[in-house]
Amino acid sequence: MIKCENISKIYKTGETEFEVLKQVSFEIKKGEFVAIIGPSGSGKSTLMHILGALDNPTGGKYFFDKQDISELSENQLAEIRSQKIGFVFQSFNLLSRAGVLRNVQLPLIYDYKTPRDKRRKKAEQALNAVGLEKERWHHLSNQLSGGQMQRVAIARALVNEPDLILADEPTGNLDSKTGDIVLETFKELNKKKGHTIILITHEKYVAGHADRVIEIKDGRIISDSRSSNHNGLKEK
Ligand code: ADP
Ligand code: MG
Image (cartoon, rainbow, N blue to C red; front, side):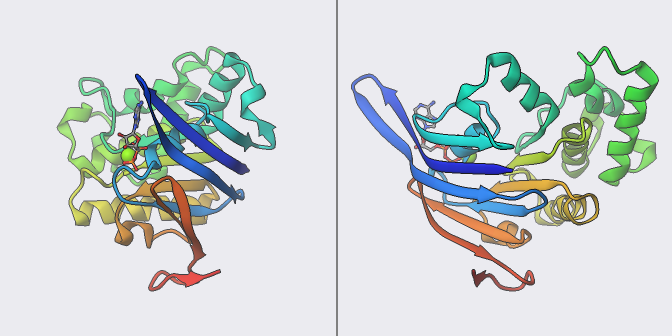
């Protein structure tokens, strides 16, 4: 589903160049649950932006569904971002004064082909998939707890039934118990519904929930390992 070939990313500020990603190569297959772990500043968010077709690498190639992203038009990229990828961020990014159901339907706002009741149905299915209790569906999003907000954000990411879910530090603003509920939600979406999930984190404990862990440091991949159970990570 995803293939990175020698990806590099260089930021220029004035005269100075800073290479954030260096020769990053890996593949991710459909249905995988992968964590990308690394300390703050190691280039994780930069990599997520490239994987989400939100930014271009400086060097190397990025293939999504076998398509070379650099060859696509802005419209084609927008189509991929809206139809094939669901994004989840640390800060939830919900419309605070809009209701839960409305927030979840936001990605469908320009989808004129889908009738209103169908859009609503899709939102309800997504909220069921993340296990948000029905009595919350009519609350405003700023009336929810952090964990509930993040589940609404995950439902919003799911509403278009994307092939890939990209989550950048999704438990970063949550206490550990609430974080566990969110991580269980991802696990279930992966195991029961077959969503491909890439979870970005700086915490080993969080990464331990995934089936495969790619470790990044100073812009380079330093390990890539699979776990057969979640108690310990074994080398491939
Ligand atoms: P992480 O998500 O792992 O914390 P980031 O990808 O956000 O790391 O950032 C990696 C490095 O790149 C950091 O040192 C950051 O300051 C730098 N960086 C990120 N975005 C930019 C930018 N737009 N311009 C210049 N430097 C940037
Ligand atoms: Mg980051």
